[in-house]
Length: 90
Figure 1 (spheres, rainbow, N blue to C red):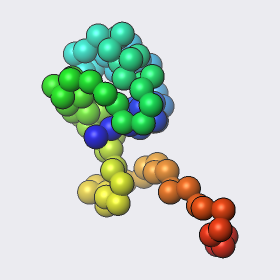
Figure 2: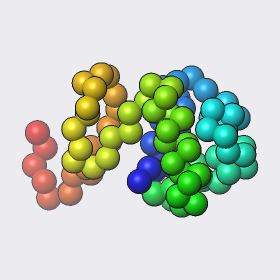
Figure 3: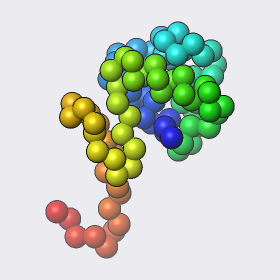
């Protein structure tokens, strides 16, 4: 799965806008806009999600899921799990 935040971050890393992502992936601009407006995991047709993920991969972005290790070892961005209020700070 891909989250809306991952899509926005991936575009930012590539320096592209929503229209460029739509062109790269072969999906419509309104579809990309709708996907990025999702809460949490992006909802949509599996084929459409696959097209966007593959376009990001071809452009050089590796999407890293929860508890996954980066395959390529390049630089990246990952959100940390939020700390609970009771957790001692590191």
